[in-house]
Image (cartoon, rainbow, N blue to C red; front, side, top):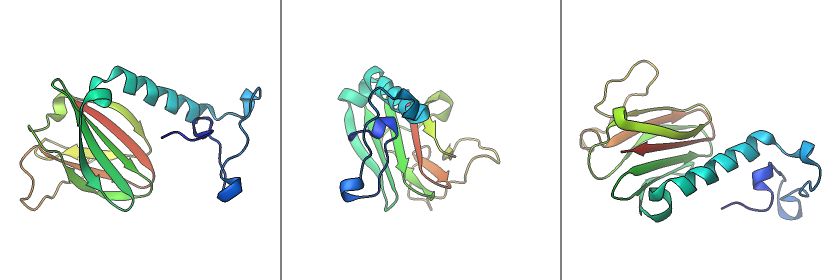
Length: 154
């Protein structure tokens, strides 16, 4: 949900100061990185059928992280959101994930991610499901701070 001025980078503390005034006619006060990210996310949502009409499955619910999958008959889209550092894994139900056919649609923050059972390298975190996840169904996810990761699996 976008709230009054989020897309412009408006900030505040709480209560009456939870948002600053929208800078109508003062474009130099708009944060172009924040506005650009919101535009990219809106464009992606409109162009990905699974994000607008697909089924919804929660795959990660943590104090500082949420993850869900939206899927239709053609694709699955994995969305992971963190508000602070996170190091863990999530299980995606259904057919095994093919990381070789996955496409990163959006990434913000410093994110390292890997699909279990696929070749990795030093840059990807280890996946340890302790036998509880079928091969190719777990995604390990590490970030030192707030992040957004969106992958499409064909």
